[in-house]
Image 1: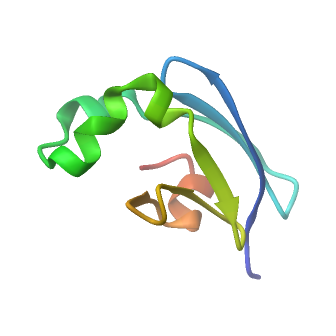
Image 2: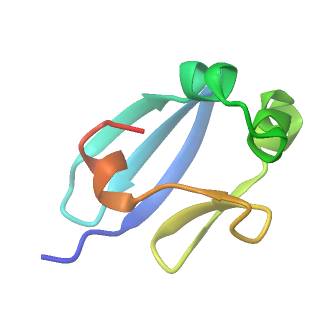
Amino acid sequence: MVISITNAEYIRGYEIKFSFSDGVEKIIDFNDFLKNAKNPMTTKYLDKQLFENFTIEYGDIIWNDYEMCFPIWNLHEGKI
């Protein structure tokens, strides 16, 4: 089964609520991932205005034309 993200909603802090094509919903907190990142292209998303500016394209969540993205299956499992 191919899973895609049908909706992503910013909640607060670094939390996003995901809805997937199979009906599963997950809230994922990106806080630890961002705070532990070493790459400046990733840590810049600690700026909440940048973090909140994601889009859903082709069933995937992306920031700034794929500058930051995650495997859909990992998000579906609640992992990043």
